[in-house]
Length: 216
Image (cartoon, rainbow, N blue to C red):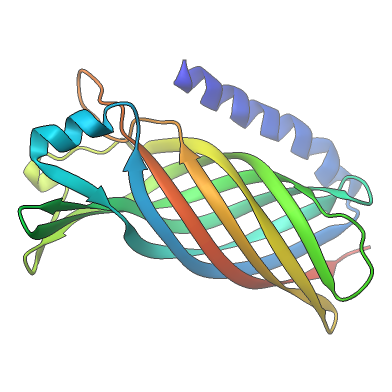
């Protein structure tokens, strides 16, 4: 069922983006960077923590990316993004810390509501879906690190979820300085096991960046 949702999300994104891109109007481009406070959740989290006698904790990782924004109306925008983002979690086990370090190339596609307000500060709310492809995975702890595959810790190549958050833009020169906070609610079980284990990524990202308009 979740795989079907991912396919529908991708096909819906393409069908919406086609006519918008073709219009060639109202395009903004931007870059952003910040931190992602990553951990994991899911229906099996308590059982997992009991089995390993551990507690899941937050891993501070990176989040860098860029975006293109298309005006759909005076207050509504479509914003496809491309991010390189760190996910994973930390596990506190008997006084030691094991870190699951995963990285992904992620493609969020967001609808942005940006009310028209007077002044230099422009608030916005956004939400949408995201598909992500695994770029790397390692385990670290006790001063050493190893690849996930070398110890049989298999992580799926595809991740997907729901993204929502809020942002502020501050007009500067011909563009805007941007700040946003977003929550990424993973819907895919990230461990590649049989039977599957209901553990999904969670992340709270805080980023800053800059955007400017191109074209007409």
